[in-house]
Length: 177
Image (cartoon, rainbow, N blue to C red):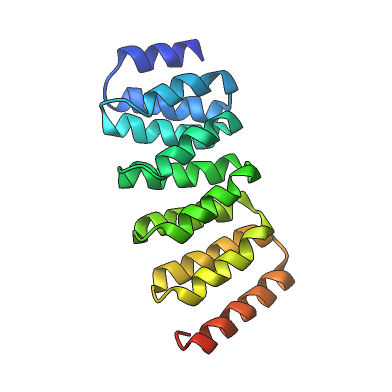
């Protein structure tokens, strides 16, 4: 871990980016403060890699700062942060992620939020995702909701098929299926 942190401080370019990624894969919670600092790096690619590494690292202490990024002005950083929150898997983030999904107008941010919500694997999200589906006319968003539902329901093929049939019925009623 110390060697990788040294690489991050000293190197530039691909070696630095790889070191950030490796720190995420190491899943060591003591890396969280350093990774959070790197999310504010002037080098945008470093900031994005740090956000991704926080998601891989899995430390729930990163959820609050990542949720702030989800609402931030940098679209790409916000999208990476939404997915990172989902990867961490802290279900306490669900309500804030759903709130942001309902309020966001930007398609790419909505797609990232839907993915992040799916990665949280919390069935409480399904009614909200169904509501979003009813209001959406965007086929990408509809596909993302299918995917998120699949992530939430896990490996139970019966439950997945039942949910997909329910989604198809919702779309049929709304005239977009």
